[in-house]
Image (cartoon, rainbow, N blue to C red; front, side, top):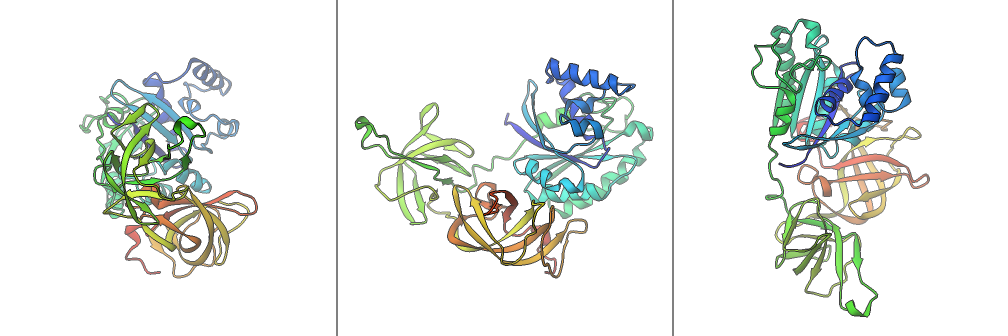
Length: 424
C-alpha cells in the first residue's frame, strides 16, 4: 500500500504531541535512547504519568514550554503501511511552519480539544490544509476522558467542522473521538465509547486509500541537469535528468519540449536501478530522446496533448514568511519555480485572506509575517506552470530575498476555489 504522508495540526494544549507520541509508542517506533530520555525528563517534571509528548517535542524550548515550535518529521510503520508524519506547531505565529509541514501531505490530522470545541485555530488549520491541496482530513476530538466520553459533546463539534470542510471542498473527512493520554480509539477501540462504531485512528490510516492521480495527471518533467559524459566511450550520449513532477512517461512516447514546443520521442528512461520502460510522479530519472535539440536546465518535458501554461505574469496565493520585512507592491524578489530561478516583481497585492471567515479584504497594502494573500507577479522570463490545484509540483514556488538569500514566501499559483465568490 502507498506510503502515507500526514500533517498534524492542533491548537495549544489540544494534545497533538501526546497523540503522536501514543501512535509512535504503541506502534513500537521509538528508539530506546529517545524513550529513556523522555522517561527521565518526565521524572524531573514530577509527572504522574509518562509524558508521551516528550517523544516528539525535541527542542529544549519545546520541552520547557510544553509547546511545539518547529516542524518535526517522524517515520514509523506497521505491517500494513509506512508513514511519514509532520508534527506542525499550533500557535498562530508559527503559521509558516504549518505551511511547510503540510505542503507535501496526503492527509491532515486535526486535533480538537473536546472541552473547547472548534476554536479559531481549528478553522485556521482546516483552511490552510485545504489551501495546500490536502484532500483528506481526519479530525480527532481529543480529551474525551475529561468530558466523561459523552456523545452529546462529540456530535456538535463533528457537525461544526463537517460544515466547514464541506465549504472548503475537502474530498473526504472522518471524525474520531479519542483520549490520546489513555489510548482510547487511537490504536485500539475504546470500551468507554460504545456509541462510536467506526473504528480507531491507526486502522483508519492504514486502510485509507489514496486515488491514483498519476493516471489522469499530465506528464511534467522539469529538466534539472543535462548529462554529457566526457568519456570517448559515451561521446554520443546525452541525457536529461530530473524528477517527474506529475503524470507518467514510457519509452516510445511522444512528449513536448517546453518552451520550444517541439515534439520528440522518448528512446530510453534510466533510473538509479538501471533502464526502465516507464516512470511516474516523484521518480528521479534520466530521459533520452531521438532528436538533437537545444535543451537546458529550466526547460520541461510535458505531455504532447496537455501542455503547461507559459507566461511571465501570474496570479498566486502567497504565505509571507519573513520576520524582517513585509511584502509590498513593487518589491523585487527571486522566484524559484521547479528548476527555474528568475527575478520577479510584485505587480499588485489583490487582497489579504481572512482565513477565519473565508473572505478576502477589499484592499491590501502589505503582507506581514504569517499573513496570506493573493498577488500578481511579473517575472523577468516566462515560467512553465500549471495551476496548483492541478499539480503541486509545477504549481508551487518559493520567493527569495535578493539581498539575504532568505526564503521569504511560499506561493501557490491560482486562486483557492472556495474564495472564488469572495469580493476583492
